Image (tube, rainbow, N blue to C red):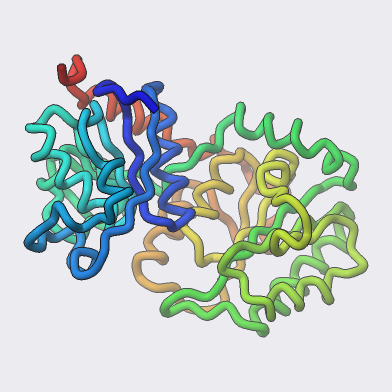
Length: 325
């Protein structure tokens, strides 16, 4: 494939959440886009994004051929190991490539031209931009595509309640007890209001939790999707058709995307959250974006939290006017 110095590179590791953020921002820039999934070998992976001698050998031969001139006009990385390569690009391109790191790189942000880190990371600096949540592709066009791609969901009774399930993370346990309590709250509300429950698992949802929701909600109208064995993932359609969304408290990405939809968003918190996650929840609640699961259906709606386009405009203003020659 021919390459151009006017391109945008989106550089990530294999983590789906990192790819999603980098691509969402890159696509908003309207430049020819190249996605690179780069996995540095040890020992460089151990230290990234810090330097380790012999950095030109951090990649295998195939990936090294991808990470080669002509260098792009702008490169966006997301994740700790990907940040190593945007840091290198700043020097390799002799400053002609505008380098962007999404998420706190855990070292001085001055090593990149722009760092985009959510407010709850509490990172600051003259080149640091701070969204409330994670960057994502959710806007009216994306939601309309979800509705067109999954028209059968329109036939489910309203209100259609989308339920987005994450999984346990460090210092936050989402176990069987939590799953049963959440299922009970959902059932109680559904019996009062009618409607349907559209329950979606994720890569981090343990089989134990999936089984509980399958069992407890078996008689309730709606759908249950937990992995590819259940068919194509209807995530985009569920967000497109949802009248309300209930999201487990563990995932910044899922909560950010839910709050970008424009319908009420609720969560169930049964134990103290880790400090950074607690700060994120507080910011959403303060902005009227997030409510408790028992909040009335008439809770006042606010404008959807759509930050990706805002930060893409800010990034375009920071980029060099002309691509490198």
